Image (cartoon, one colour):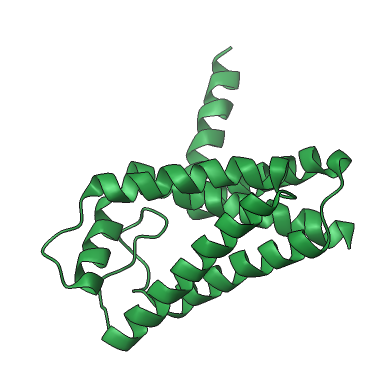
Length: 174
């Protein structure tokens, strides 16, 4: 059970980090999608950045104080909110990409938001039922950070050859 919780904690940490960084850097996509969902002219980018700050804070709290009931409740509430937005997006037939990871591409609010919300709620329940032993918290954080780096590398894999070509050129020059 500990291995499952370490993996789940790392995955939740990675997703929260990736989503928070994406929203903080590029809040416009999510702001536009929320405005469409809510039927408003606009949603301020500052509201999206506030959500991003919350996600980044949770990304740090999950591996370190994930056993605290308050952390579990906040993560579960965020998960329920994500799922509710996904359901509302499906019912209203929103079309703009959600921008959940700061990208202007992707799908509109719907099944992915519901799945993400369910994953957050599932982690909160698992962490409540089987608290992560203190000695495993750094492992969960380290694994989560590695997942984030791997995700960024996969997302931006077209740039990786340029990096290696530059390193090879530097080695040949010296």
